[in-house]
Image (cartoon, rainbow, N blue to C red; front, side):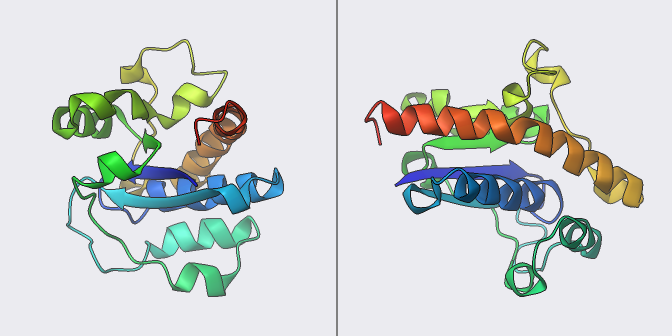
Length: 169
């Protein structure tokens, strides 16, 4: 099983959008039975709460069923997850810095910016690959975040396909 986790600040906006987007794309690519995608926040500020209602609205707009979204609850990233995940995707540079500062040396290469998989952002430095927190804005900010996430998803799928094909998982 190839395990991916997406990580933002509180796990109520960007990381759930990325989790559901990647999960659906992997299933559509025929990789769903060999992969698992979840999400967390670098903080526990929102732990136990549902995703932001604007996040849920954005996901519903893109065809995600209410029954799937209703069960979501935010949680904080736990240190032992470094060893149990194959790919850890940060949604902004602050998350990347936090995760790398906390990760054991053997797990550093697992931590990437989500947008490093977007061909339009892949050549940018990690500090310029972040997705701004839409929590501070309006629905247009959630639309923008979703579009940036979606642009990176095909690259994630191909990366996972290659990892699974080489027999490492």
